[in-house]
Length: 307
Image (tube, rainbow, N blue to C red; front, side, top):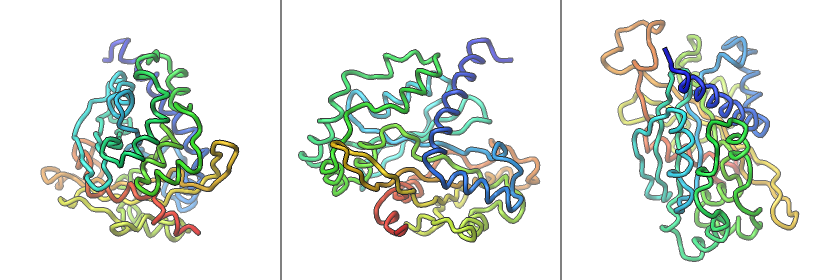
């Protein structure tokens, strides 16, 4: 039985997650369309049946922000930091976080190694992030769901100029995405393996998605598979959004996307019937090679295919 503090924190966490998903769904029309298609084809009866494998955030790796700041929120609610991931070519670090309850999504937080970028791009980024004096999470009452929800959806620095956005994108499309989108939810992930027979693998679910007209990230192939063959992922290409930049300039840029994950049973549990398989029986964590390609769901090499 959970103690009162733990119960209250789980309630607060759920309110924070609900706020994230509400704004994310409003911003990513593909979410509602995918859910509608799943209902239409009889894969689910209602949206609440979808199991969220994980959600992901992108951050700037500067002293007062980055992973060390954002993770404070979720560690407070009982999440546990797990494996570290390095993405050398994209100059990123990341950790994933195990939830305090198996009904909750995992969390994946990445950060850009700003100090690894060119001096000019570093200066542009810091001209924005230096507006944040100290770690902003330290000023939050993490037991106040409304306060945390508002923080995750407000600008931390001034609206960027279109020229700065373009210059960042030339060197790091990740940097450009974060300078505009801040902590907006980068994606949520539909769990595939618990869906009905015929749609419970990434291969068959991708076929379902493409049959309904959804565009999939093709970087490294539409299916990203871990070396052990037990974690398979795919994603849509990020939707383009109308973004207002400094001075009122409007431009179309990449927003967020939807991911899909199939976690196969660990070797010790392959004998179990599917009805008896639980989360702890399946492959956990993430795979750097998979995530490396999933990141590109917001990159111009993929979003250009929407034209």
